[in-house]
Length: 195
Image (cartoon, rainbow, N blue to C red):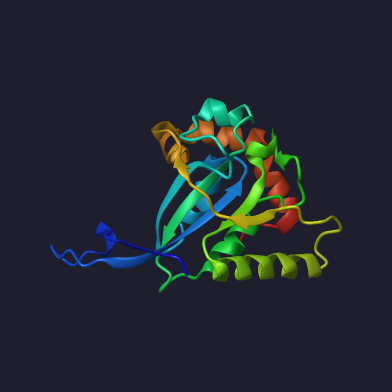
């Protein structure tokens, strides 16, 4: 498993500088504003960062990615404590927050910059991601193919500050966007009422 050795205040013991081993997960599921909240509410997730990955443009900006010309997807990078939450749990949350049947984007956002994808960081993440996709394919839940891609992680570029935790900074605008985009309506159609 891919590990990050870092220090995070949430795990500090008084003034000690003991480090904690964290792991990284990277997912794309359309608008990154909407992908942050489901993961940030999970215990043992240390941070969720909105950004861009999977393309060829160095240090892309939001307007560049939005144009669809960079190859990048809007994505999130999750830092988590694998001793307390496993990658399979993150995958379960990921699937239930996307439309895995849409090859043209996600919900009201269309274009490759809004594609759904799992960017794996090591062989174990690849194995677990492919197994979870296979389980969905064989479940009989859907009568269309699952088009979410599973690809190696590449450089992740953090998005501009105003995009980070947008749902907290601009709750009214966020809720309006999410509703008008039809995200929750489609998720309920696909997965049932959220638990």
